[in-house]
Amino acid sequence: MRGVIMRTAGDVRMEERDDPKIIDSTDAIIRLTATCICGSDLWPYRGIEPVDHTAMGHEYAGVIEEVGDDVRNVKVGDFVVGSFVISDNTCEICRAGYQSGCVHREFVAQTVGTQAEKARIPHADGTLVPTPGQPDPELIPSLLAASDVLGTGWFGAVAAEAGPGKTVAVVGDGAVGLMAVLAAEQLGAERIIAMSRHPERQKLARFYGATDIVEERGDAGVAKIKELTGGLGAHSVVEAVGTQESTMQAIGATRPGGHMGFVGVNYDVTIQGIDLFFAGIHLHGGPAPVRRFLPDLIQLIWEGKIDPGKVFDLTLPLDQAAEGYKAMDERRATKVLLTL
Image 1 (cartoon, rainbow, N blue to C red):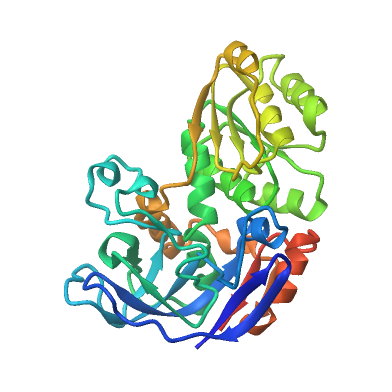
Image 2 (cartoon, rainbow, N blue to C red):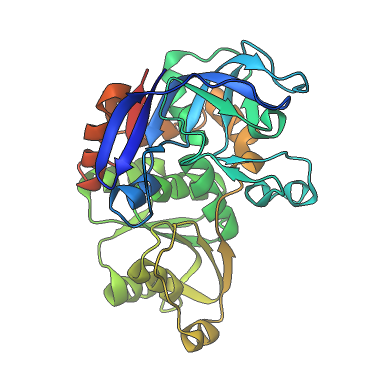
């Protein structure tokens, strides 16, 4: 089969890979219908994470071709969406709603590699969720978004305790940040402030429910949020970037006693203890337990109540993945859909 390999930083190629095979009795083999490039895939692309002839991709949706003998919850022919983290969905951590910390956790990124024609998914019963039927083609981008960015943005909003009567600020206008805006709106937030300098992303943020746009960053961004909230700061802040500046901006924008959900992969972020101490806020985040939200998100998509697929603003065939990486690295695209 064909699959995307990153040989070294910045060197993305389509190569022939062995077809996946059932190894454990809990495995499933999926023929992917669509896959995509994630903002976190840019970390190895930019040399921030190590990479060496690595199979890329961790977002996926498709049709099951084969299952192991012990798979019970999904069957051959099912259209399924899976989380970017493998989980058994039965351990104590999973039952508490944190499948991304499962005792059998395995990250799909740089191991399974779903920017490919097929993929082997371990712990299929705990990781995959079937759709109510075979989806119409126009639903597939939205279902694919549920595999990571939608679920991650949703977790960011939940971790920030977005809800009725709350003012929510979202730091980051990438795919995850835009999905956090969508989630905050669905969770009933009264006011949603999207922080963005990008006209096209501002437009999409408005579509998903943003009531205000703030273009300022850093200390100026914090000051603007406080100006909009009577000097108090937002009740709920979602940090969806992972840089030093965005993290401190998110902390500063959260009112005392407020909640900050952090879902940006944060490399080289240092928080001074005294700054955190006097902020007096709740912090909750990390790798999103997407599997917790998948059944409900799939149903919302199926019923046409949300349209996260609009976050894909560039569609390319799988064999042009290298151009997709370049477009996202240069911020010419928010998120790239790869067709098969």
